[in-house]
Every structure is written in C-alpha cells, then in structure tokens.
Length: 235
Image 1: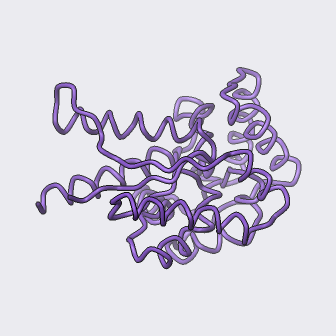
Image 2: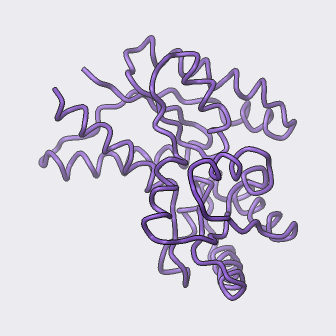
C-alpha cells in the first residue's frame, strides 16, 4: 500500500486546510463518505517558531528530518510538507529517508508556467520573501522572476501571518490591507501573486486580487492528491 506522510503543525491552521482539501478530493474521486488515507506527524509550532526566530536552521531541519523518519517508520512511502518555510528541510528529509518528497515548488512552478505568469509577487513569511532559500529554489524550476516586496510590506505580511493567521484570526482590515498591497504591485508590473505561506489562503483568494492568485496550499494539495491517485491506479 502506498501511503503519503504529511509533516504538519507549522502552523496547525494550514495543516487543517490541507486535510480538508485532501478529504474533498477523496469524496470527489470515491464518493459517499470516503476520506483521505494519510499519515500525519504534527510538529510543535512553538518549537519550530523558536528555531525560526533564532534563524537556527540546523535545529529546524533536525526536527523536520525526525518527523520524516517517524513517518517512514509508520509506513509512509512518500513525504509532503504542509508549510512553505518548512520546505527548507525538504531535501534533507528526502535524503534521510530515501522517500520521494512531493515538493511544493515543483507544483507551484508548473502552475505559474501554465498560467504564463512571469513576474508574480511573492508573499510569505519574511524569510520566504527575502531569505536565501525560497526564491533561489524556485529559480531552479521556473523561468520567471518573482517580485520581492519592500521591507515595509514584508513587515506587514509577516505581522498578519504571525500575529493573526497562525492563531486562526482573520481580520477584514488585514484582508483589505493585503488586497491593497497586491493591487499596488499589480500596477508596477506584477502579473500574479504567490501565496508562499500556506496560511495566506485564509485571508486572500482570487476575489480579493486583480491578478492570478497562486495559493501554494491548494496547488500543493492538488499535487499530493494527484500522487495518491497515481499510486492507487498503479495498484
């Protein structure tokens, strides 16, 4: 039996959305009361946020690798990580377990290429937006060039994520501010917006934006479902 192992908890809010989306897929494919058969390892968000704030990426990666190894021991035959920032440890998790990793940036790059978006605005945690992982990793898969928000705008997005969304708080005022931010960059040439933090789909959707929205949560969940369906079809 092929079984997808999901590394979640960073944050729990996003992981919940992934699980709902995968269950929606299962009902669509199988009908009735079917649900997605997946294996979860939920990391402690408080611990992971501490490593994030300290920029202790070795400790951060160690937690993710241990989660991946536990999933393999539990029977997982592939791994997926339900967080953009946490993909910093995706390669290490794959190497430590020998399991395939269904990588968020693979499906994201495919979606943007199919849409013909070459200058998308990149939103996410401040580290996703300006760190040395997300954009360079994306560049290995994607010929376009993401627009990185200004320092002030990165602070706004970070505040909304860390002070509100990860706590399950969605404010209309923050939605308006985020929508205005996207519209402003659209006037400067952005031809799409990447929701590079998996909580951002809680506050922004296509109706809030004048350019195509690339929700990594939804795109990645679709890719995980596609893997599950391919495995089921192959027996």
